[in-house]
Length: 92
Image (cartoon, rainbow, N blue to C red; front, side, top):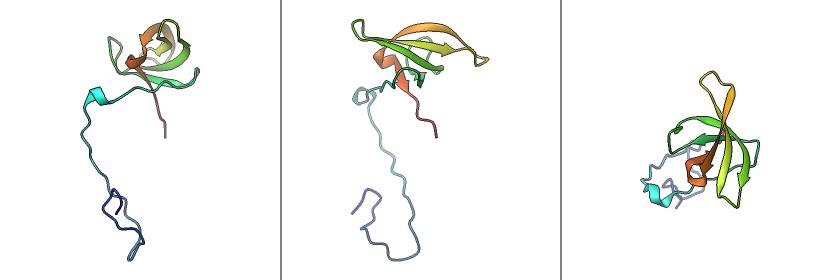
């Protein structure tokens, strides 16, 4: 069977997607950095919750250079964040 409890092959009236809620400990998660120029969200630290754009990855210093959005949406300040403080944003 599948994760949604189905056994495959559909017999009946159409596909219904089931949602599965899984509890995951924060220690088991990793942040993902996008390519430079792509959107990010700050997930830890003083700017947690802010969005911005990844400008550059400083591999030797293990830092992400992020242009953080101000409240009015204009990118005003650059922050140097640890890799685990910033994460790729998936926009739908």
